[in-house]
Structures are given as structure tokens and as C-alpha cells.
Length: 310
Ligand SMILES: OC[C@H]1O[C@](O)(CO)[C@@H](O)[C@@H]1O
Image 1 (tube, rainbow, N blue to C red):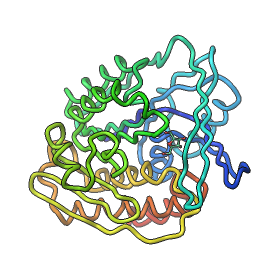
Image 2: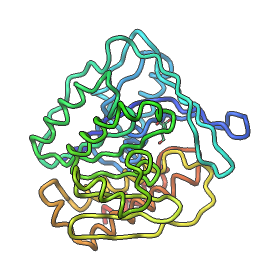
Image 3: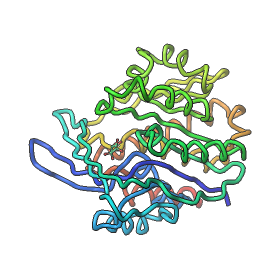
Image 4: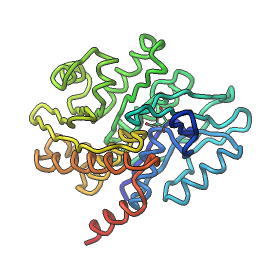
């Protein structure tokens, strides 16, 4: 069976609004994506690291209850599971402060076997952190050699802006390893100074020719050598935008899985099919903004799941 592997950081998000904690939930970009995919009943394997501590136990339990395989998580003894404080502004967009205390020995895992057409998703700080780069790179090269479909989301947080120059080569290398890059307008403006979808594609194209560019308050764009699409996003009053991009990614992965699109088929996907995929991304991202959760709800997943089985 075709599998989905997600690689990314794990944090416990503590969400603040008007100076008060209002919710706490497992977070990290690829964890968020994984939980949505797990709730949809897809075979998702999360590759990450966190502590053998109370936060880590809570996260293990949460992943297992939501259908996410955590066999490839490195549970460390020294150090503590990471925390993120997410402060929502008046538009319910978050800014983050991270608390991390990793052990000396990081990401000590045996990688899973990858097969042709499996989907490998990675992104965010974990995709560029120097402490684990060699291990991650090795895995990506291995997955690429097997013709897996590799999906990358830079998801660059302003909290890391001071390190951008140092990190840019890794971001570019990640784009070169990817079959699909999905990036927000904010990301590509920070990384390349791109101000719109055309400038964004000019910047990304030398490294990866399939770009999904999202401008959350307006539209999602697809750019490939053959196809350009622009789908408007929905106007809503968000409760919290945390996890919107991650859940958009889950929508695309769901579409790739449902339509059985592997790496070889990617270049021949029709504009109609792409439109459906981007539509799932927008639906999923809209749903996640309507609660403090970072993932689609179990009810929303169930409706999709049932539709799938029909
Ligand atoms: O950058 C990490 C932060 O971003 C998120 O993944 C949302 O996209 C949060 O869950 C996490 O705290």
C-alpha cells in the first residue's frame, strides 16, 4: 500500500488570546498535517523527535488516537519536549515564541523503507535545522532515488529571521529535492523578496517547477510549466489561523492520494484535477481556521472519508 511519510518538529502549542491561555494542543507543521491525514484514515507515518516526558506521552497518545503511526519518532531521555507559545492578534493570526531544550544526540532514528510513489512531506524549521540536516538530507536523497513524490513547505517563521542568510542554502536545496513546493506569499517574500505569484514562480522555478503559492486572505495559485491556476480563498472570521497552511498541505496530500498521483504522473495531471486538489486545500484550511485546533475535525474528516468510500 502507498504510504505517506511526514517529517517535522513536534511542539506543544499553548495558545494565548488577550494575554490569557485559551487552548493547548499538539503542534508543529508536519504533525498538524499528519493528524488531519490520520483522521481521514490515510496511512500516515510521522517522523520526528520529542521527550520521554509528560508532554511527549500526551502527544504519543494523541497521535495514536488520531490514526498517526509514530513508530519512527525518536523519544529522547535528556532534554525536554518543545513548547510553543502562540499569541493571537486581533485578526487571530499567531506570532510564536519557542522553548526548546533538545539533547546533544538528536533525531537518532532508523528510517522507514520508502517505495516508489510514496509521498514524503517535510518543511518548516525541521527542514533547515543544521543539527539534524545530514540525517534529513540522507533520507530525502534516498526517497528521491526511489522516485517518491516529495512535497516541501518552507513555512519560514519570523522568529528565525535573524538566521535567514545562513539557512537560505538549505531552503534552496530542499526546493531542488522537492517534486512540489507549497509556500505562502509571506514565505516567498521573506526568502526571495517575491511580491506576487509571478515573481514567486520566477524565484522558485529554477529549483522546482511545480509551485503552489498561497496568499491566505485572497487566493491559492498553482504554477507549472503548462498550467497556471488561481482559486479564491473563502472570506471567513477565523477563530485561529494556526495550522491553516499545514492543513492546506493535508488537503493537497489527500488529493494526491485519492487521485492516485505519484511522482511520474505529476507532470501530466490535468488542470481540472489540480483545481480539485487546490479546492481540497482551501476547504481544509478554511475548516481549521474555525476552531483552536490545528487540524481538520474528526466530523469533517468523517464526511470526506464516507464520500471517499462511495
Ligand atoms: O513553526 C511551528 C509552529 O507552527 C505551527 O506548526 C503552525 O503552522 C504550530 O503548530 C507550531 O507551533
